[in-house]
Figure 1 (tube, rainbow, N blue to C red):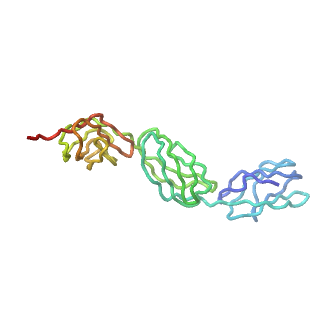
Figure 2 (figure 1 turned 180 degrees about the vertical axis):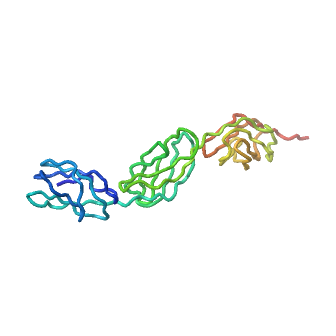
Length: 247
């Protein structure tokens, strides 16, 4: 007498199909000491809505001919999501985040606002999921759905990719140390600035401006790349290194 599915939320309400023989005219289907609601019944199957419960319980069917053998049903506690890391990323998605919590082993879906993704279960306390693209920048609720139910929401921020407009000054000494103002958009979450692939120290002033200290470099023009939580932007040949005079 198979039962499908054989697990569900402790709150009950799961639609369950039991198959077997001589099941016609079932008068009761019990999950432990509690009785389920029968929604359909044929000689070979019964569909029920299970009651609330906890732990592992025996399921059996009673007809005019007696009571069947028992099968096991597993009640799954509701999941809890504690943290999300990182909690921001590009509007285009495709980055991977980790969700930590409890009761996550049966996770089937992670929702980011109106979009969803299928997670990889690392353990009962951790999931890994590739973030789906967002419809626009801004914060969305993130929930995890498992056999036991759906978590309370965490918050994830979609961030638009940055753009670079200009540098001032756009040239400086090969010995480095030039203070360069970088103008653009989406710069508030900047995590890195490079000049010709060399990391520069920087400070963010606001969403459209930051100041970077050009590192030492070789004479000539180099690309300037700004990386934010929303992605990266490149100003090709944006800064020119100039050699100092010599006599």
